[in-house]
Amino acid sequence: MDVVYAVDEAPRIIAAYGPPARPHVDVPPRQGTVTDACLVPPTAQNQGAIEDDLVRTVETALTSPT
View (cartoon, rainbow, N blue to C red):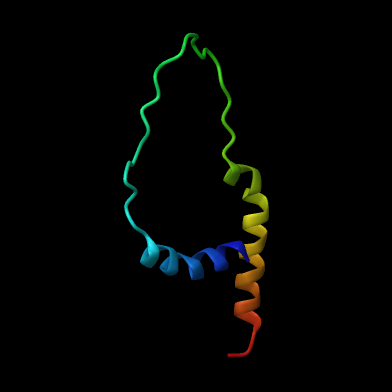
């Protein structure tokens, strides 16, 4: 369902988009060095649910009378 909503919502977001006044913010470097990190993006955490939603959506579309 999330994917269907995102596809439906995308044209509205694109139409309303305006470039920001400043596309980035300067951040001065701080002391210290990151030597090891593990990044888990939110999509990776939800991947199983996204796939399940997509399977149900396609199965419903394929079995529903048109």
